[in-house]
Image (cartoon, rainbow, N blue to C red; front, top):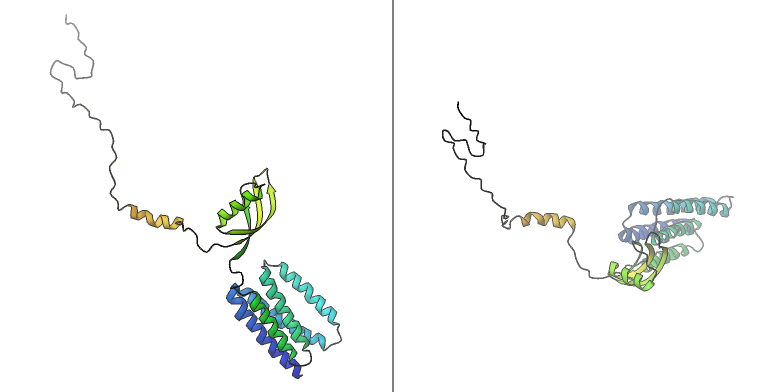
Length: 238
């Protein structure tokens, strides 16, 4: 019983540090933080019940394996988040078994949390990036593709995996690993251009030169003479 309480305390401390001191400050996903805690505590409780009952441990582990696969397929997770997912699962399983001697569970839990803290530290390869990029041109030459990607990303491309090359639609899809640039040219955004538009109204506007047309003044007709622009009809008197 002493081993059980030690393992329970070690699990709660380890999962709290792993989720709220390591994972959440780096990934900022509250939904997955809650899922990690629930998964860890649930697996630990069920493992404790299975270890003290007549049910086989293989059945319980197989059930949790199926549930884990369903959970991983229900949402888009990065590879780093999958690592935290399995770490929460291992912590719950290991502490649920509460092995003997009593110090083994706290030591193994602390070791697992330390490994994830160091392996996923932001200072390890901080500029390394990976993206799947679709280009509106078919690049059959890898040198031209690398040059185009470096101009687009503004960094040094370290590896290119061409996933699709469509000559008919003039399309290239590539999985790119590159080093992000530290400095880049800053171009004004569309909303900045809209905000700068009223300032242009302060400048004096020069009038446009337009042709002026002068109309002659109408001539008043005199008695016996037709008005200008009207035909004159002269009739003979008999």
